[in-house]
Image (cartoon, rainbow, N blue to C red; front, side):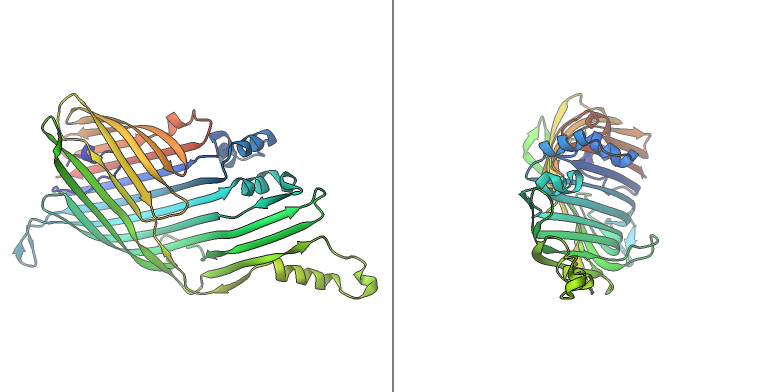
Length: 401
């Protein structure tokens, strides 16, 4: 097994060797929120007004931010026989933990949260297209590896641990210069479930499918080395959450200009009745029921470097698409240099995802015949970026025999 062949667009995948594979990934990014701004969330403290205003001035009409972590442990083995008959296929058993949290928001939404209602006095605050999505799950998969190692498929049982989804299809708030008058119109949905207390406390169940196939294109060979293109489809599936999941429908419109205090004297409408009327309009109504959510299905298509010991540079290119409205299709471009079979280095740029540019360096190292390790990080490079932020740390350990 040579994990350098998988390069850094893809996770280390099973092939013709028996192996134990560990993949660990963490990623966060945003095209509008910079490192200094996010640093206050990590370290705590009040965010300076000048910084909040600077962020606002640099935002687009629609902005993205998000993060995720993923860890998997796989055991690949090639039995001599299966059901009493000789075989040369491979089998793989995998356990995965995955959580994704992402948001799509407008500049108006940011201004409301971080600058207050003074930022839109005598103006219209547009909250439309707000979408927040958070999902955490584990899965246990059983898979098949083709004798050539070029194809693998895994079917998994998914255990849902939590999900939160807020969407506003329509949202407008108008306030006069004194802030004493509000005209509002909100339409959307909020769905959630109770958080799992432990890793084995599942709030839902589902199925998943993962596929990988390596295409060899001999007509585009480079100095006798065929071009290999890998297609990888991960997390195609769903989770059916338990019946205690909460559904909240947001459908409110009206005007608020304060409470009428003299109602005590006139007795036409008490303060309690006014507050109850406001709650009927503003406070959304919730109900319990089952929810079905789709997993963060991701399709990645990209080139693999050739397996050779020549001292030459090889270009890498790939695209990644996720079935999520909070994720932008990504374009990945890089260079691969493998002077010897035991070592390789790669420089990769990635634009998209959560709307930001990432630049990173990766390495692959073979420690003897049976142990391989690779590491990719863009945390150091992207710490110097002012507009937007993005940090990734991906590593894989492979022990093969």
